[in-house]
Amino acid sequence: MNIVQGEFQVLDGKATSKAIREELKKKVEERLAEGKRRPHLSAVLVGHDGGSEAYVASKMKACEEIGFKSSLIRYDEDVTEEELLACIKKMNEDPGLDGFIIQLPLPKHINEQTIIEAVDPAKDVDGFHPVNVGRLSIGLPGFVSATPKGIIELLRRYGIQTKGKHAVVLGRSNIVGKPISQLLLYKGTPGDCTVTVCHSRTANIKEICREADIIVAALGKPHFVTADMVKPGAVVIDVGTTLVEDKSTKSGFKLTGDVLFDEVAPKCSYITPVPGGVGPMTIASLMMNTMVAAESRD
Ligand code: GUN
Image (tube, rainbow, N blue to C red; front, side, top):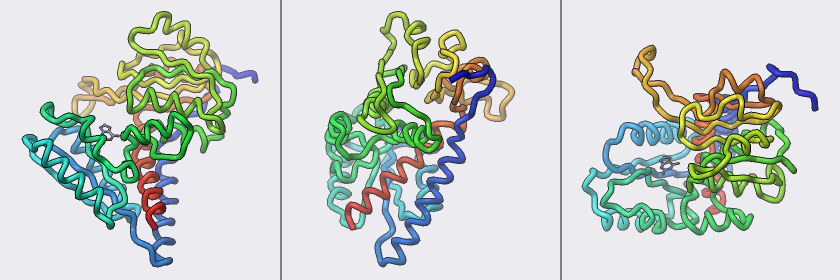
């Protein structure tokens, strides 16, 4: 394919997320007409971290718009691990609850892994439980965490070919880097990529990126990916969401991606913006997972 520089398509995560949420809303109406329950999602929020408050509020708002039942359980910063475990046990056993999430990060005195592993994998709509992580790694159905699932959904809905492509993932986090690598490796469509995972200790990261047909940037380093690292015609997915000081905005901060968009975009075939790319897909994916959880419990 001959790609002329400048002919790139922006992957609109906002519009795609809206389309998915509208599909889910219709599905809820169909379920109700069939006498089935509204899917029910709960979120546990510990403390008052501004970022977590905002994320949870948008998850609850999405539930309301789609017609899911939602409930928010709040604890103070000094909640004990035992109290949280007791709450999780109750939610695991609640027949009227389809899925729940514990918003991370948790206060330092609580072991996050202990909390994650206490969640029933069948209600783990965040896809963080080792059972769901393991199922993903061997290609079995299970809950996949929201951000990587959202990226795959974006590739699928835009009909972007991945088979035989070299995908370079920047970042090895449990929430994004590792699961998106597994999904791109998946035997099928989207998938069938040859995957290279780069991280902070990788040598020759620029050279490796230049070989990529698809770049997924999930390092959390603003503007890390520059035009000299991108092959003409590449697909660039930006997962970065760093708040960078910017006096020109009302809040004094600007949400900044890992890709220097203005410089990189003209070299791409497809690229996601920040904001409005991967971010909105994350909530849509959580809602999709909740629908699947409800359907499996009908
Ligand atoms: N904190 C940041 N992202 C997430 C997420 O996807 N789920 C939960 N539970 N906490 C988070």
